[in-house]
Image (cartoon, rainbow, N blue to C red; front, side, top):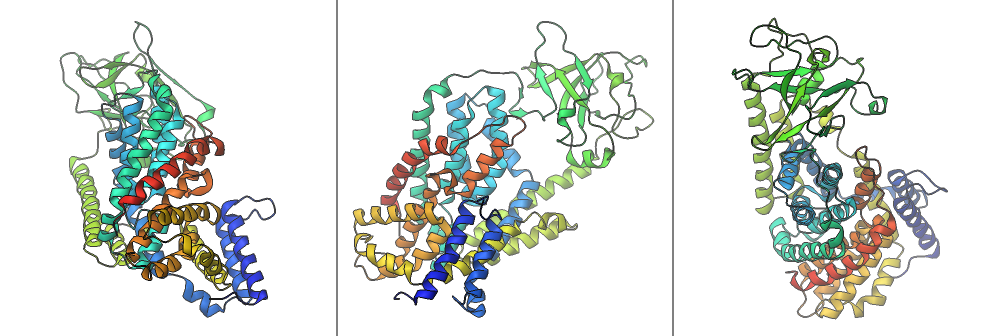
Amino acid sequence: MALADTRTVILGSFAFVVFWVTATFPKFHALPIGRTAGALASAALVVVCHVESPDQAYASIDLPILGLLFGTMIVSVYLQRADLFKYLAKALSYRCRGGKDLLCRLSFLVAFTSALFTNDTCCVLFTEFILAFCKEKGLPPQPFLLALSTSSNIGSSATSIGNPQNLVIAIKSRISFGRFLVGMLPSMVIGISTNTALLLAVYWKQLSTVVIRKAEVEGEIFPHAIEIANVGNGNPVADIGNRREHDAMKPNLVVSLQRCRSNGVDNSGQSYHVSQNADIHEPSSDGSSSGSQVFVLQEASDNAEKKAVSEGSQQQVMNVAGESLEKHGTTVIQLDSPSSIPPLQSLPPSGLCLEEPKWKAWKSRVWELSVYLVTIGMLAALLAGLNLSWCTITAAVILIVLDFEDAGPYISKVSYSLLVFFSAMFITVDGFNRTGLPETFWKSVESHVRINRFLGTVLLAAVVVLLSNIASNVPTVLLLGPMVAAASRELPGASETKAWLILAWASTVAGNLTLVGSAANLIVCEQARMSRRMPYNLSFWKHLKFGFPSTLIVVIAGLPVIRG
């Protein structure tokens, strides 16, 4: 395709520049409208300026990709409700032997989960846990945040549902889920191993200096409002008080206290939920109200929390001083003034607020198991070569039906702004392609990036990495994908499938080069900066110092083992 007329080239290029500026710098002072609105503005320019007709613009929107994105987001919402990532976090911290052990576990676990549930989802759900764990263990957060962002990008390269650019490649190339996985898995394993080794080499000294604190109970971090400390050799105490700085957190603190074996009577099966509206007196074995009791601190269930707490009540915070009973694997606290602890809800005549019936607990477990089985079935269908988008949409519908309640609150958690962004991006990129500039650029480098030679493959990867950090990875794939595939068909000994997979590998790992190279990086950065537990600024330069060498080494290390 030759260059279009001057008017089309100028207007199409201008629309693409608007898209690029707002996507790369969403708070750009000259146009601070954000990524989604910027993409819509650029798409409107393409149509209004007659770079392409309205029918051509609608035809350029790839509905299978949007359907695949929508389905995976719904499935991720229900997996989060089923506590999958909570269990993964527990597995991450189980019998952890220190910073180096945690870093290795984090890298490989995040890589695996990103391949199945997208890199952005993993970054959203793991960032706060990592910061809390680092605070409790006295570990530096920087290597773990870098491990989270870089490993999620590398891991997501293994499957066609791991990240948006892979979705585009899978739909455009018609490569099946299983073939994509087989072709990319060796590169992902080598890449994540190389990246982890680099992290250990760079941060070895920092990870060797660890201050162990006693705020962890069996690998779980207590909620924000509860702080554990040792009070010398004296008895631990509990203090109830108001703290205004926690007003921005949940409107109420809910704590479940389970009584231990006391005075020879086993009351371990009784649970007490406490809040603020009245006094609660625990009967002792002789019927009198005791002034000091021993409890085990547990996390209250979300359902009980929502039902029991009144909306207008003022939050109270418990600062608990406790000591770990390693023998029983839990933390026991002694309350000197239990009468000051008010209940969550009206208590039965016995003065106790009993736990939910066992059948409800079993119902919850069966539902969680159903979510996992449906997800496994979806992955099996994808491996069998069924339609990508309709497999994920069908799995999402099954989960909605199994939940058997209004799905509105969960469907509303879908990132519709991302779907709008993609729709507008398809129009903008198609309009830019009509200028003829991308093809002209490709012809100037095509003779040097032939994938039937290793040097040509490296040069192609370098071009993709560079463009992915300039124009973002999804537009780069949309612009270069068809041309790279067409060129590979004309080369002796070259594979079109391998050309698409090289594009997937280079464009995905390219996200690790700079902080703005990937949405996953920005998610980790922003969540860490806004964290209440342990705010941390992962700056552009901190990321670049590790991201630049890591990206170059990992990309080159993974190229030879891509299987087409």
